[in-house]
Length: 451
Image (cartoon, rainbow, N blue to C red; front, side):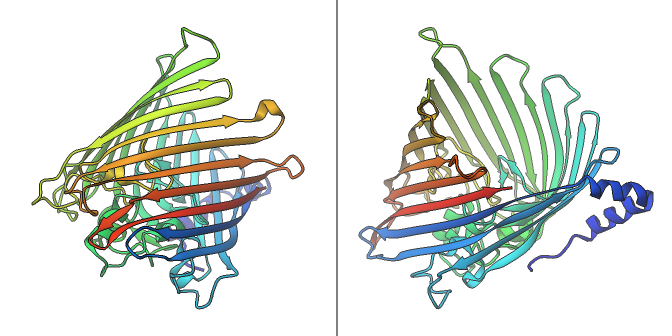
């Protein structure tokens, strides 16, 4: 088992016991267990003129088992155990020319961990949650798209006393990379371009291959420099009909201050009640702070989208742009670094996140259909994204990269709580250098059974 149990959380559990053992017994009696069994198959065949004919695949089974106590005067405790185990993996397992590394741990070994271990207290409209937990906020997210998600050690206070307003204040101290981060399979000795791609795609600038499953200091994980973590403040307002406004500030000590803002609007169509239009604006601004371990940062990302839902069909269009680097600038200067997962950017693909590289203009079209009126629990979607790359982005040459993809999600009637997912993504011109271009065709099949 990887990772260490937080001493502070054990202490909190002992304090609860000290306040009243009889009541603690009642908390556990009213507790509930839940979990998920997941089987995952992925197959990726590389393409392009760079001579890379690698074909990787892997199959794994795992999931998580979670237990949450009942509520005693607002206090509850929770823990969750995560595991992933390879099936039919080619030997040697660490042969990355055949085995896809995104479902397992270092050397493609199986691994298990105590991923959640927290205390939660609710009083009125205020909730505090502290310890190991799963987060899905914009600049710190679970990225639960392979076997194990990203997990965090965090302490968050949420308050809803102000009408139509949610306020969040907290601090994130540690990050445990999930298995998906290993797709950016670089170490400290890898090229600057590989590191740049990783840190703008949700993961480490120094080593995203071997840190999976370990709770690591936020700065150590990102840049190999210990920091005081990431402080978070936010306000979300929904007091205007059909409008949602969000403003978040992430202060990553000695790295960057990151401001995230978003506005989403829905309205009634003048043409038909069956048409439901929507629009959104998204902005990220980064500036270096303190010891500036990532160097000078001045990144700016802005995006907009419009969408239309017509009965069971929906279609959307989005566009984004980042500020440009000069030829002499650090390649991180005007990029948007996202080392802790998260950020559902309007223009990102299923895999490709080039929209965060400096000087990138990206556009995306997506559509989907829900087959519920035909008596089946099936939803389908498809998309196409193009990334106009600047010569000073730091990742390859000036070019247009692209990614097309699809997804189908089905809930069989004969097995309650079973979800079947089939996904595909097809990046082209993902990377380009003196040796040529690189792309791939990837398929994923996922079965999730929730209980």
